Length: 198
Ligand SMILES: [Zn+2]
Ligand SMILES: [Zn+2]
Image 1 (tube, protein in one colour):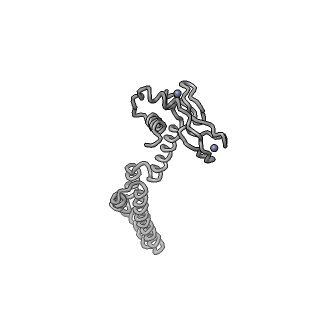
Image 2 (cartoon, rainbow, N blue to C red):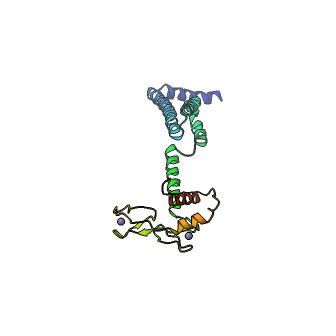
Image 3 (cartoon, rainbow, N blue to C red):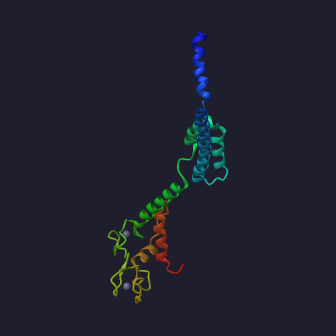
């Protein structure tokens, strides 16, 4: 058996002592080390993009370094599982999208008196006949009844017409405020409308 293995061992030793094989082996080791260090730097930068915590990026790099050039791929898998799901840019984008959605919801105005949904260009609330806008006689655009002059063309209105909203709002108790945001916005508008000089 030994006599059978001996030539195989000789061939193997000869293969290893070949200078080309030795250079190739060294290159592979250098490449693995570079890959290891590069991955540690990638984890550092990746964590920087995902958290504002100044220490966590160093932990991410240390995790890769700790697993040595031989096993760092296991650390990469661990890191990919544990890292924050979203980057800070993605979080920012999502909050922007949510804000624009909220603005979209607030654009759906409510009648200040009966709280029915009204369109932004309606003159009168069809439900309670509250005057929502007046038409500027000069430029024909819609003006808020509380404005003393047209915001678009600057024409002075002689006298703001008596608003049914003011009469009704003064006579009837205001509905109980709720936590709903659009209700809150409508409430703010109502307060602004009923009290032009806060
Ligand atoms: Zn109404
Ligand atoms: Zn006008």
